[in-house]
Amino acid sequence: MSTSSSQSAALTATGRPAPGGWVALAASQHIRLVAVWLALIVLPFVLPNNYLLSLANLAFINLILIAGLNLLMGYGGQISLSQAGFFGLGAYTSGVLNVELDVTPWLGLPAAALVAGGAAALVGIPALRLKGHYLAMATLGWNAILIVFFVQFIDLTGGPNGLLGVEPFSIFGYALDREPRVFPLVWATSFLVMLVILNFLRSRSGRALRAVATNELGADAVGIDSFRIKLVAFSLSAALAGIAGSLYVHVNMYASPETFSIATSILLIVMVAIGGAGTFWGPVLGTAIYVLLPQFLAGFEDAELLIFGAGMIVVLVAFPGGLASLPTAVARWVGRRA
Image 1: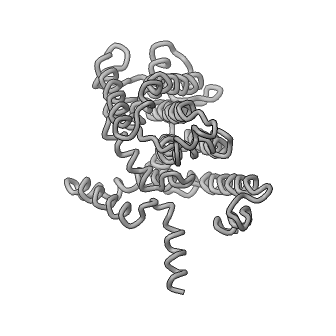
Image 2 (image 1 turned 180 degrees about the vertical axis):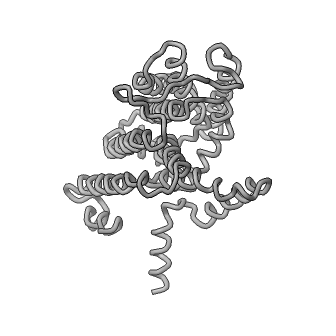
Image 3 (image 1 turned 135 degrees about the vertical axis):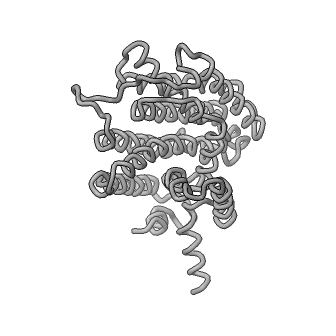
């Protein structure tokens, strides 16, 4: 059954969910999620070399990062220019704990999520009272502060030279230090993150978040604490970025400040928009563009950035809803032609 037909079956003639309709819609999304990730598990066996497998591993990590930002930006309507900063905060938290205190990466992973999520909560209390470009500027400043921290605290972070000596994940002494070995970890973690996001969106908090994004005054009028739900979304998005950062630093066994720059935060927002902001599968498409397109443009040297930017403009002009809206746009075109 297609997406549109399954949704139609779950709705009454008035457009409201039929009895059990939300359950049916949620179940269909869960089934698709499981099916897609089961299909992706064969990648180590079909990709011809470890380089392509490394891109797949990187894609799963970036998916966590972009999906978290989509939760805040696409569903919550809040623009954050600090996602790369939280990504770096998670990476340095987990990496420094491992290098300086010999903490296992398995403990560094939840620690990274807690530190990034906690920092977002502290920053969000004043910042989320702002709206629009004022919020964007506030989060931009936070990302800049983190970059200064990563560069200046040389004894702790390694400064411009980066954090060295980070250990990989290991299971019973079996180091996950090669691409085929680390694949199951990033594959499973990204699946769990997507499952958490899906369940959150189907929860009361998820529905409240979308209500706030649609009409904040209206949401307040019906008893929704709009500030609290925005703070929850902001903290959850940052915590997911922290998880991605922990995976990144232990998979690469290295972290460098330029990876977490403001330019990266801007590019992540663009990828959310290109994939389809406010859609569940949009981050998957945005991640694919984010990871694969630079590989195809590497041969253009100085023109790479120009072509990359022009391509993004074309996509956003042709499909304002992102690539996730492409099937709907094609279906409407076919319907008009028919």
